Length: 84
Image (cartoon, rainbow, N blue to C red; front, side, top):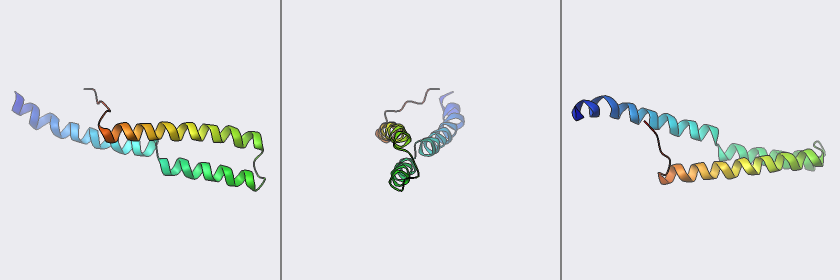
């Protein structure tokens, strides 16, 4: 029974882990979020974005960046559980 489990389920779990990793990288792309933060700053400095909108978007992006860093930290340290 255990041999059958190893043969059938281990490859599946490996694929799921790989897909999970790709999904996390895509959903929590730190480079993209930091680029958006820079773009927000630039638009404000050029006068194309009002200060209220700039501050609101800045807070949103900083919160997303904090979450993304935490997700990447947890995933790289192995503290993320994949439930079967």
